[in-house]
Length: 88
Image (tube, rainbow, N blue to C red; front, side):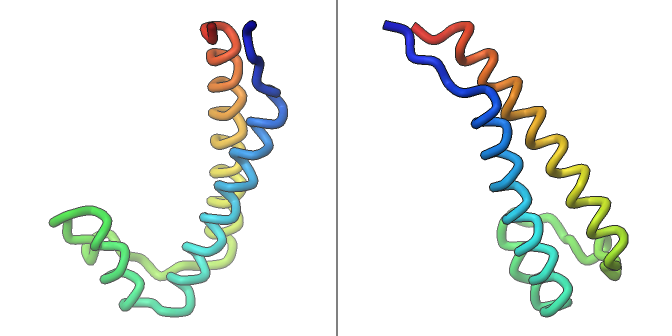
């Protein structure tokens, strides 16, 4: 029997999880500044993030959050469609 994923459920779940991570990350950068840069540099193994760092602003954060949610929703939606098409 073929199990199907809820396309809407996966899309919304992906968007919510992305929003949570984005907000937490944005708050860490906003609150901890340079210390957060050192922390996040641990994830990119040898890439110097200091040349990429900018001062975060609320408008940019809100726009980034909206874009991230849209991309995550679309990715979850596409994933569920592809999964449902090829699941055994």
